Image 1 (tube, rainbow, N blue to C red):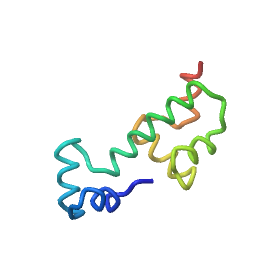
Image 2 (cartoon, rainbow, N blue to C red):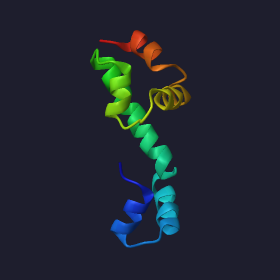
Image 3 (cartoon, helix red, strand yellow):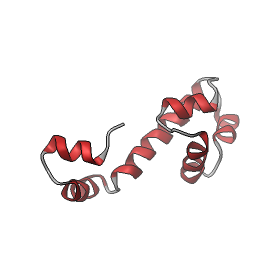
Image 4 (cartoon, rainbow, N blue to C red):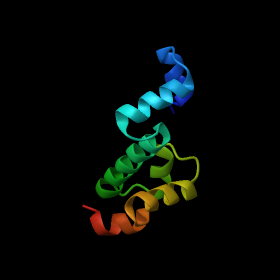
Length: 89
C-alpha cells in the first residue's frame, strides 16, 4: 500500500507539504481517499461476486475484517453483508 511518506519521497517533497497539497487537490486527506477507494472496490466485489467477505477485505488491503466492517459501515451506513443482500446481482 502506498503511504504519504512514499508519495512525498517520490515527489521529493516533505510529508507535511505533500499532505497539504493532496488535501488541497483532492479535498480530503490521503488515508480518507484510500479508504474511499477501498470501499468503492468492495462494493463492486460484493455486488458482482460471491467471494467471502473476509477475502474481499484482505484483497482490498484491510489487515482485519473488523477494520473493514467499521470503515464500510461508516461510509455506506450498512455492513458488507447487508450491502451484498441488497445489491447482489
